[in-house]
Length: 371
Image (cartoon, rainbow, N blue to C red; front, side):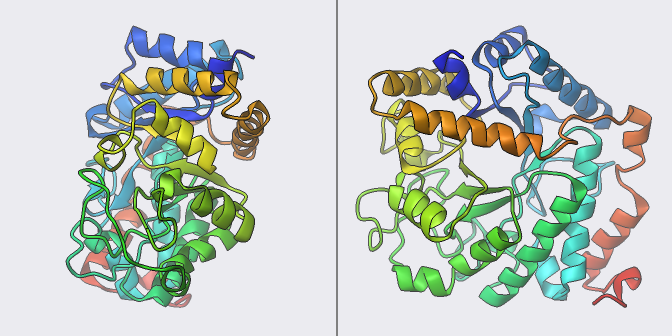
C-alpha cells in the first residue's frame, strides 16, 4: 500500500456541494480517504442525501482498501441540526436532561440514528457530553444535557446505547470537556485553568461512562489546560490522548480530532504540522471540514513525517488496521435500503411524537412504564 493511501484511511474530509465533483472523486479514490463529513451545504432533501451517500459509497470499489466510507454529520438536536424537514426536528439535548429519563435518552439516540442510517449517513458526531458548568458559555449552552455531572453521566450512557442500537457510529465530544469555556474554538484557542483533580471529579465523568458504554469514537476538544499539559492543547497532547485516554482509561475506540482547520489550531500552528502532531499525540483520525486545500497538505505532511521516521510506520499501520476493524464491526455501514424503504424512517410519527414531548417537557406515554 502506498503511504498516501495509508494516511488517507486516517482522514475524513468535507465536500463542496450536493454531489461529488470529479476532482473530489479523484482525490478520495487516489488517496483512499476514510470518509466524508456532511454540512448544510451538502444536504437538500432525503432523495438527494440518499443519492449522495450511495455515490460516496460506490467509490470504495476503486479504492485501495475497498472499505466502506464513514459518512458523518453533526446531528445533536437544537442548534446543531443539519437535516431539515421532512426529517424529525429534534430539540436540543438539554430537553433530554430536563426529563431525567434514561429510556427517553435511549430512544432519542435510537430514533435519530435510524433516520440518519436510512439515508446512508453512518456516523453522527454525537452525543455532546460536555457539562454546562459556566452560564457564560454560549458555545455549548443547551447543547449540553445538564449542568449536573451525574445527570450528564447517566444520560450519556443511554444516548450511546441508543445510537449503538440504531447501527450508527456514535462519537462523544468534546474530550475532556468543553462545558466551562467561554471562547469558541472555531475562533481562538480556549485556555482553561482546571487541574486534573477538577477534570477527574467533573468533566471526565460522562466521558468515562461513555467509554464503558462502548462509544465508537471520542472527539478531541481544541482546548488548552496548562495546569495539566503546559505545552500542548488537548488535540496535540500525548498526555491527554495516549497517556490518559488510551493507557489510563484503556479506551479502545477511535480517537478523532475536531476540525483541524478551526482557528484554535490554525492561528497557532503550521498547517502541515497540525496533522503530524495530532497523530504523534495519539489521534487515530484527522478531521477536515471546510478548507479543500487542507487535506492534500495534511496527507503530504504525514507521508513525509513517516518517510523521515518522525512518525512510526508501525504506529500508522496499527491505526490503519484499527480503523478498518471498526468499520468491519458495523455491517450496516453501506445502506441496503431502497429509497422507498428509507422514507418510512424519515420523520416517522413516533419520532416526531418523542420530539414534541421533549419540547413540552412531557414524558412520552409509550415510555411511562420504563421511566
